View 1 (cartoon, rainbow, N blue to C red):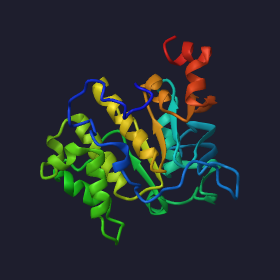
View 2: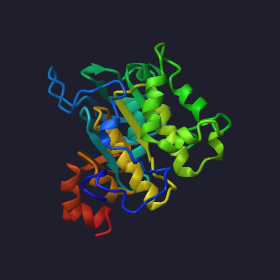
View 3: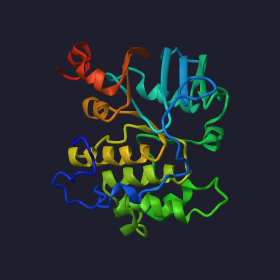
View 4: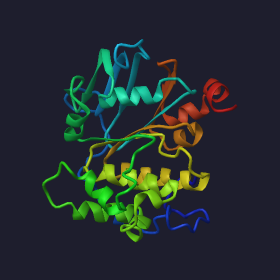
Length: 277
């Protein structure tokens, strides 16, 4: 990836993934503040703090696991299969029992809130699969993302179309007829329609080509630049850490390594054990 995602399009002419507009055309999705710890608490904007828990009454999958992200930054969770990456994401979003530890958003303890209540607080979650309504059009999918809003949603929809131009072109088409990369754009766009402060992405590049993966990462960078916090689980660890402000390597539900994305990429043990050398 280039150091500046707007410097060029790396030869890719597929309008379904490349936004040809300069970055200044993209406005915020409801938040314009930039990434620093909460002034009152000194901790990150969103934190799952020493979480221990699992699904239902089953065994614990997470063991004192901590995941956090500041405003306008990108935090990436990586690790081997079965490490608890998606489980940690779901714990932060309230989809499983956190038996010990806490989840805090902007200094507020939200550990016992339902996922629906967390959406109302400004969190949006895009699951890896079943993340669009295939029988609805692209535009209807985006409208569904704004179901909690009572204000005019057209401005946000226009911003989503600026971010993903192919969606405007295909807005009357059934989402189930789109390519895998375009479906992911619909899923992310629908989440942005909530005007979130935190956008959580579970394997956003699963099953897409390397070129589409690269461009989706560029769009994620662009969203973060508007002040939205990005928390992301990714199997493409090396590429994800390249764009990460903070990286978390999980092993068996525990924090194995935590550092900046750049530092983790340069760590010999991380490279040898998790990045293929």
